[in-house]
Length: 562
Ligand code: ATP
Ligand code: MG
Image (cartoon, rainbow, N blue to C red; front, side, top):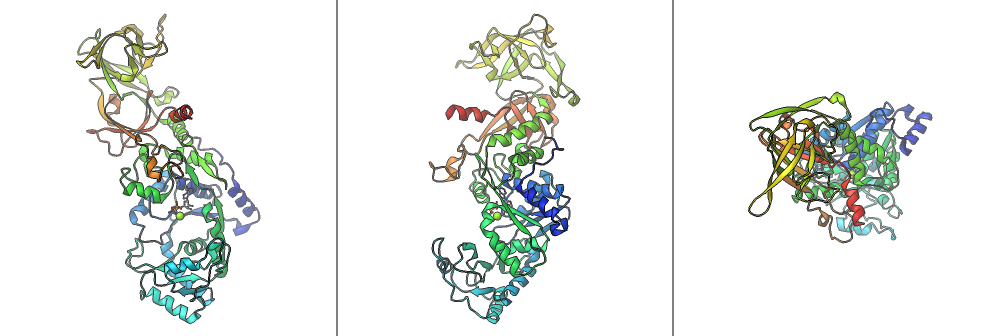
């Protein structure tokens, strides 16, 4: 990715341009990213982060990180910390501008009191079941609650007693008094406050036993922070009248504009926090940062560079129409970034030993290999060559069709960055399985194209005596269905988990230069793909994760099957 790229315009930027031209908000642009700390961030959130922080950067505005923390039963400090880590890692900085909706609990309480005083809110004693029943349906208007006409004094008293903890959970709620016949169900006297005893909130502890609802909290938090453009996903479109109703009734100083855009949906995975939580809790994946998860933490562990994710978010655009994106688009962004930045190395994933019989025993030499085929500035490294090597089993066939360009019995192949070898003999065990190849090398073939020499293929290798043994984890898509959520065949999204999403190879051999790498380091294992060093990696137990294959192998499979 080119960091200098001018961001593509979109309808939200057009709205902002027009607002600036009209000097709305005195030309100020203030956005926010408002996660609920009830899970880890995923690729969908990355879209929202890039949009909100990106707009703030480009318009010299501000972007707040605001935790939307009104549900203490589901939220916790681990999630708060993980969210901060992930936003930073993606490349964005909120500076001092980190806020919590819970910072405003006292103010929000006062706003609720104001609504009661205006006759625009009441305490309701209907049970949750009754409330549902009274609400009506899309085709049937709701019915007024029998508590709707309580006096202002009674409402004030009851609300104060709700706060004081006098009532049980669910016994009473505070509701906005709007219109039980509204065609928009969100306006049928929505709840503003509910009672929640016994929760210890990660910010406010046990100070509160009533908690404000999302719709009430969100617009007022935006207003308190002086947000100008409140960007959210389309499912909130029907909530916008309520967003505006609260701000109009309360006559606040700042009335932000809510603008909706479509959620990112990525094929072969899910972007629902609730479902991702299930995968973690049911042990279907290792944890939130399992490299197969579409979480930012998972993608980091998988080896996706943050710049590739930003590039992806830029490419998919921001619109109101559905944003269903092929996994290949994200993987291509990752490939393009790593192709430029990842040094090349050799690693043998399915080792087959070969002995070069005309190479002296006990001898070795160092050959020079470029770290990047197109970028000389990345320099070279020295790799040991000796009598005993490993090549990949896949690169040898006893007999093979003409188009097989690798090693066959009696045939020649070039070892990458080294000599041409010939396979002279195949050694098998009692069961007939190949355990070793006897080969010979041509010492005059070190330079790339010695005269009159035609060798069809080039394969990778490592020196057996120098290589390091490592575990390599091959990750694939988490689901085998492009839309696990909507799949007709299965009862549940978990029915479509891909049983082959992780293949662990415990006996791989890597070139010796990979002995001193640090977690997070990226490499291209030549002819195999891009790999990164796992956080659990140590010198004693090296672990590498496959980030992405060299080519989009799924596109081919789909063509074949389709
Ligand atoms: P929940 O399932 O808990 O409602 P959520 O995905 O809406 O989850 P939030 O923590 O409320 O989670 O999201 C923070 C912000 O990220 C919101 O503004 C939300 O609109 C945005 N966001 C969430 N998912 C996506 C997505 N798939 N694409 C784009 N933006 C998203
Ligand atoms: Mg949400």
